[in-house]
Each structure stands twice: as structure tokens, then as C-alpha cells.
Image (tube, rainbow, N blue to C red; front, side, top):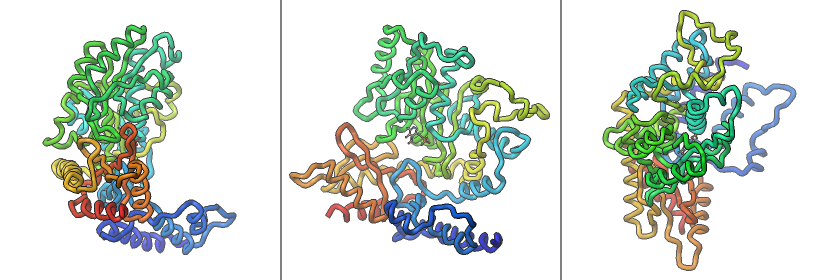
Length: 462
Ligand SMILES: Cc1ncc(COP(=O)(O)O)c(C=O)c1O
């Protein structure tokens, strides 16, 4: 195979693919079921490698039948959009293919990650903070919980968990499932995660939290962790960090903020009030791969106090890798991963490209688009909001005709829309009610894109 010729053609393929993002008629996906896909693409690996043409053919097939999350009608997940500088950062990441563990093999990326952590910490008011890029928001929550556990029960690192401690963690009843997975992983068990009642708008009720902590103490348990959410997965609600922080201080509990979805709101002067009190938290999960539109994965766990992350690892037999050359800090010494992608690099390219104010404007636009979408729903006689919009998420449904089950009706609409490939939007349940959940995570969205979404959706309701 001629690599230069493939690269030339790849260049064109990439340019055409990116150009689709500005074409109103381009499909988000040319949907095929698994059987159809297997007929189109030869998935099995043969004895002999493929030819150059076959290789290019596979490349085109992969792109043709994958979901194009850069298409502005991809409104399905908490991430979306095509971010050019971050894409370039992703390409150079693969091109130079190094690992974050040591300065020796990643001098520029190490310096970039430290710079990014410092900048992100400055937004949180963590003046003596630290942080580490991790492999996603779920893992940021895991590392947050794990760090808190190592503070309250340091002996666990070597001796295992003393179950008589009965450690308990508290989260919003609408918090992400990753907290329970994390509790399972660190050995305290998913049942030790106590779900705290949310108010009508989905944010954690602080009075209910205090009550739950006192009840836990009465049961002789050890409350040690509160996981607040900055942007819940369905409603985009923000827990009241200020008042949760006072409660945590009173009872000596670690306060973690899960900003995996909505943490990037901190970049907006106009909207960051929803995160008042972030400087009082002990750790913060911030996922630039969602609202900052960095290609997956790009996620950081920030901590208020330097040194706590180092206590997560055991320091056993690491002299084969960490040589303490020139007394330069190797970031691998505070990561639970060994090999680790240079995920901060694409964020750095994007932040350099847009600048601080450019990124702030993108976040403001995301909120503006969610506000606009909510206003369309309110002014359409066939649609209804199912909850007051809190931030980037708009939960609504089509008012089902008399005699039809509203959940089934709305599910059918969303499935019909998905299969057209014209727009993709997800759904979830608010109690027993199915809600179509529109997420305006793409910083490049315009009102025309939102209008087109509703046009495509309403066409499926006939
Ligand atoms: C509130 C919240 N926390 C955590 C996560 C997990 O983040 P990730 O998908 O990066 O693991 C999500 C994902 O949607 C989320 O909405």
C-alpha cells in the first residue's frame, strides 16, 4: 500500500466529511440494522491483508454508516459538535502517540496538562489545587470517591476495607449511575450510596441531605462523601453547592462536585452562579468532552488540596518507570492509570484557538439555544415542556391525541425520527413519564438548527 496516496485521499475524505456539517440536508446517520450492516461491510479479518482500494473502501464505509456527531442535528447525547482545533489536537495525539506517565516521554504534553489543570483550578477557586486527566466523567467520579475514601480510611490502601466502618456516600436521587459503580469498585458497595431527595426542579434538597446524614450516623455508619451534581443527566439541574458545603463542613464530609455534564458552565460569567460554592468543594469532575465539544475522551478530576491524589497509588515497584529525572514531576505518580493518553493536548489546542472569551461565548450560546428550544415548545400547541428548563437540557413531549398512550406515542415519534437519520434526539423517564430530552451541547448551534430539529420532529408526528 502506498501510504502517501492513502493520506492524500484521506485528506479529501476528511474535508468532505467536515463540509457535511454545514449542509442542512446531510443525514446524521444512514441507519442500518446489524444484519444489513454485516451485508455491507466485511467485518471479519482474513488471512491476507486488504488492498489499498479495499482499505479506502472500508474507511468510506465506516464513515458512511457511523453516526456523524458533528452534524448539528445530533442532539442525542450530552456531547456533540465538531471542534476543529480539538480535532487537530486529536490527530497530533495519535501521530505522536505518547503516554502521560513520565515527563521523559511526554515533555510537552506534561507541561500542557499542568497548565490546563492550573487554568481549570483557577475557575474553581482551588488556589492550591491539583488534578489529573482521567478516562471520562464516570472515572473522575470514581477517583473522587476513591480519594475521599483514602482520606477517611487510609489503611484501606494496604489492608483492604474495614467493613465495620460502614462508610456511606450521599448523592442526588437523580445523580449519575457512575457513583454506584464507583462504590462497587472501591469496595464499600453500591448500597452504601444513599439517594437524597431532589426538589421539584431536580436539585438536591439540602435539608433532606442533612436528615439522611443524621439517620446514617444513628445507624452507626460513617458518612464520608457527598457527591453533588452540576448538571443532572436528564434535567440539567444544579445542586446547591453553597448549602451542601456548610453541611459537609459541619459533619467533616468530603464534598465532590460532578460537573461531568454541566461543569463547563463555570466558564460563563452570566451563568456560573448556578455553581456558587464550587470553591468550597474538595474535588470536581469536569468533562471538556461534553460542553466544550472536545472529541471523546477529555475529562479531568480536580482536587482542592495538593498531595491527595498521590495517596491513591501504592508506590510499589515503580522505579522501573519513574526515575525522578531532573526532579521533574511525573504525572503518572498521581494517576491510577499507567499508560494514559495525552487528552489535555486537544483541549489546549482548542482553548488556544478560541481563547478564554471565545469559549465563554460558546457556553453562553449553548444556554441561549436551550432557552430558544424551550420557547419554541412553549409556543407550540402540540408540544409541552415536562420540566422547567434548568440549563442545557430541555425535556418535553408531544401531546398525544386522545385515547393514545403518551409514552408509547412519543417513543414512536422519536424512533421514527431516528430512523429518518435527519435528527437524533434521546429520551428518558421523569418518574413514569417518557420525556424527549433535547441537549444543545454543540457550541456552534444556531436558531435555524433548532428550528430544523422541530420541523423534522413534527414531520414524524403526522
Ligand atoms: C451527571 C453525569 N455524571 C457523569 C457522567 C459520566 O460521564 P462520562 O460519560 O464521561 O463517563 C455523565 C454522563 O452522561 C453525567 O451526565
